[in-house]
Image (cartoon, rainbow, N blue to C red; front, side):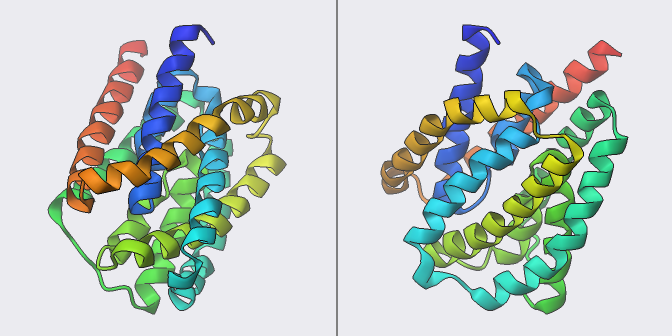
Length: 240
């Protein structure tokens, strides 16, 4: 990886970490398309590993605001979704994975844009957890399904509950990815290098929250995520 490529990845991780810490999700949607453009072999492992660190920090900070019941039902669905995601990862070639990743991003953008808000009752939480496990393990983008059912929550409750779910879910995904060989030495080395960048993103979120409200942050993430996904699709089609 060249210095320019690393800088691009680091900037994407910084911005994605800031967004993740601010609204409870977005690490994969924002960073994954950029990382996949630079080095597809780092996706989904590096994004999930960095997200695990961030969610742990947020969980500790917002632990008193976590909805344990909602988190529990979502995790019921996460288990089979994670296994299915690992199966997809084993079957898809790198180009197919890149296109799937871009499609998941665009799907999440579309869902966030139309304002659809299913209620966070038991069935929807289990279904959202399963979808999050499937896409999160296969592409590192598990935020949109959970964000849909949790969008009525705000502030610490949103960040804490989402982070608690993603902390446990990310650990599940990493275990499965390690078993299947999708997490390797290069992934671990890059993770250690990028951890300080992700932590800086978390620190920056505390200042960004004072300037950008949740709605502005959401709109910004939608635009940036969509742009990254479109570029990724264009790259893969150009290579055909």
